[in-house]
Structures are given as C-alpha cells and as structure tokens.
Image: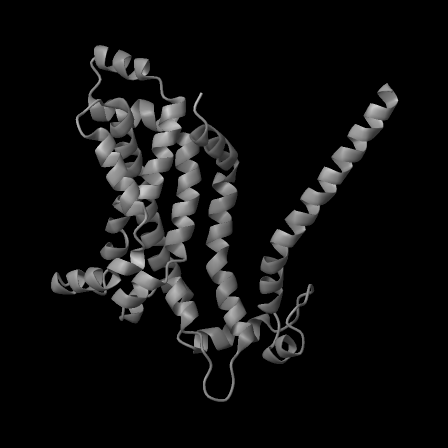
Length: 282
C-alpha cells in the first residue's frame, strides 16, 4: 500500500513537472521567435513567419533600422526616464496613501477608499482629450513630465498596498516608533517601507512594464523626435509604398523588450511573496 502511494506521488509529480515545463516553453516561445526573426530577412519572414534558428541578416536589419531615423539611444533614455520616474512616484505615493488608510483613524476614511475604487473603474482613454487640452494650455506638450507626474495617482496600486498592509502591518510597531520620538515620515520611510518591500517590488514590475509599453499618452503629447519613447519609435517603423522591412521591425521590437526582461529578472523573486501576503489577511 505504501509503495503504491509512493508510485502515485511520483507519477503526480512527474505530470506536474511536465505541465509546468510545457507551459514555460509556450511562454518563452513567442519571445524566442521574435528574437530569431530579428536576425532574418524580410523574404525569409514572408516565406516562414516561424523559425527557431537565427539567420545572418542581423546587421543588415540594424542598418535598415538606423536608416529609418530610429535612434535607440534617445528612445531608451526617454523611456527609461519616464518609466523609472513613473514607477518611483507610483510606488512611493501609493504606499503612502495605503499607509494613511490603514494606520490612521480619521473621519471619511472609508468614503475616501470608496472614491479611489470608483476612480479605478474609469478608463484612462476617457480623460485623454481633456488631459491633452490641459497640458496644451500650460505648455507641457513635448515634455516628459506629463508622462511621469500623473502616476502619483494609481488607484489599483493603492488597493494592492492597502491589502498588503492589512495583512502584514502591526500597528503596535507604529505606536512604539511614536513613543520613541520618531516622526511620521521617518516612521514611514524607515519602518513601513522595508516591511512593504515584497509588495513594492511586485508593483514596481507592473508599473515599469506598463509605463514602458505606454503608447497612447506619449503619442498624443509628443511630436518632437528628441522626446520620442521606444513604443512611438517602434510604431513608426512602417515601410514605404513598395516594401515593409519586417526584419528591422522585429529588431526594434526586440530592443524594446530587453529592459523589461532585466527588470523582471531583478525583481521577480518578490512577486509570489507580494501577491500571497497582499491578498490574504490573517
């Protein structure tokens, strides 16, 4: 009987491993095909859109890419400034708002949280025209600040941070810090933020990826090529009337995704801990 149970457990583990490996390969496959197509010519891609082996046209695709006024250095710098600034603002101020909703007992706290949840249901595209008109009147078009500062208000992140604090924060720690003479901001920066490290890392990944891939807002605000972000540059990689260079387009897409892999691999170990602790209240 014991041997049968052991055999059953071994079979179950084997099946689980096979399923997990298969799903992992399926997740990696689109990115692998994209990187392989970045090394292939347009003719090869038109003949067969899927290839698991690299070709020899990487440098020719690079030459075509640069010839299309695609400046990866400018695009990387602008996207990096916008994504980093937006991520820092969103994470810090969302954590601060969530801390105020959990640690302080003030009148209207629940109503304020309900208002945040209502804002969460409003699509960003609905306010696009009004946002552009406001930025135009204060002369902030062709400026990176309108892509960074609005991230201070991130309702979804406030909700996540609040749920995490409800599960992990003991208010006795806050009271002890106050008794020791610690100021409110010092308590938040030196005690609360380290406690929230898994949640911060988790939301930082999502915020950075969302800001890096954002095309709608930069497209309506930026007209100067020196301020273009990577998604705008990739969206402009269209061919002329006669031919579209698919190899250079795949190369531009591959360059756009590289920083996302770096950020994910640096912070991914916090995702499971952040989701598990943020979504379950003990």
